[in-house]
Amino acid sequence: MKDVNSYQNLNTIPVYKVDTGGLRNEVELTQHQVDKAIDYAIKLGMEKDSIRYSSNTNTVYIADWDFLVIGTDLYPLAERTDYPNSNISWRGTLFHEIVGHRESCQAGRVFVTSEEERSVLAGVMPKEDFVERKALDEVQASLRASVLGLSLTALERQDLWDDAMARLVGLGIDFEQVKNKFYLERKS
Image 1 (cartoon, rainbow, N blue to C red):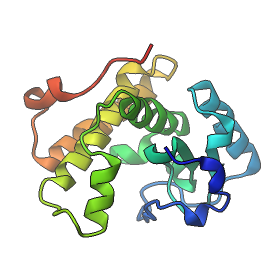
Image 2: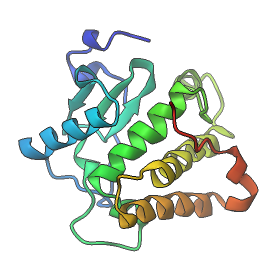
Image 3: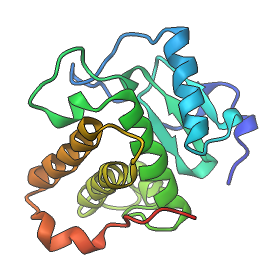
Image 4: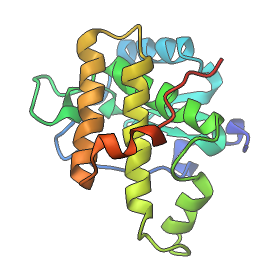
């Protein structure tokens, strides 16, 4: 793993800049919202020195550096929509990133490794099944947050479950056919 202390400027961290297309909050967070999110991320197991806020990128866990970037999309839209991802609360988003992605990475139970992702982005590896496997990582992260997020409200957990199911529908995959592929255990 690379030393996160060498990344003082978030612009040097290779992350996706994803436009939410109006599907998540895009307004800069207040200092209070950022502080609350950092405190919650620490409760979920992140080290304070491995958390940053950026209004220039989406919320993302970066496995290579065990690093969490909190973006404006941490928060859902002000009103509920038919698009499940738009409804996920800020706490649900942090569970998705930390319990969903981080713990899966630490357990070696991901569908796409960081090395594979870099190879695809560099054009070295073809995208054929990468896109589906990357989407399955997102499904797994939402499922893990839904199933293991016992401190979340029932609605927060349902929103995460609905997000996972919507992603599977988008892939044309039946949950019953793939449910045993997902890592839904909690690290000890």
